[in-house]
Image 1 (tube, rainbow, N blue to C red):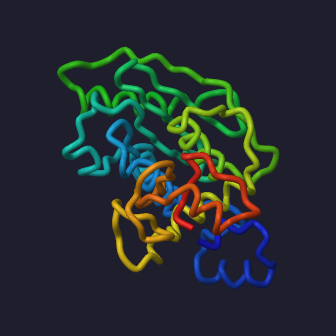
Image 2: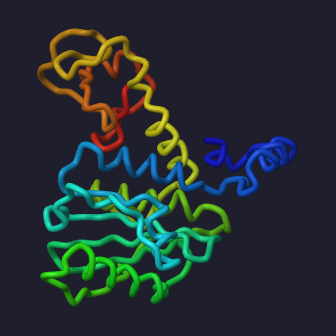
Length: 244
């Protein structure tokens, strides 16, 4: 979780580096990206994410077994493939099986990594749909770029979030979004004493009328209850609400 904090002190950074050789201040590790994408997709039937290790192994000509077990490839609108081909920069491949399109999102460059793209296409056509290989179309939709050398991980998480929320990919406060990633993984909803999708998490009364639904646990909160408990805060958009 410390990789989400780009402001940790030099002494703490040094200490963490001793414990994990790959620790770099502000650089998101694979487990954080996997955890966030998992939370994005876990309650959706139209999307799916592939662990970071998948593309890493694919780059070495190996296969991560079991990833697509019990997954209907063509039933998904979006499939996210996070990749770190250079071991120094995160990018995101988004496969759209229904439209036969693969989108490439790079927070820094405007050119697709052709080697990884070709390996991904070969894997999909030979392993997932050998009876119906597709001539995929590569697209690089316009998206916001990073202005530093360490925020590529949060940016690819944002791209996945924006695509599912159907919002613009052209603007984001990436430091604020780091906090969103943290909240998604920590899941404040786990602090609730009991789980129920029938009662408000704040007043414990039956849900009805105007309400918000937590994007993590799918529990509800009355909008009036939220405003009463957070009088100085605006009502969050439905795709941004987490249990208070």
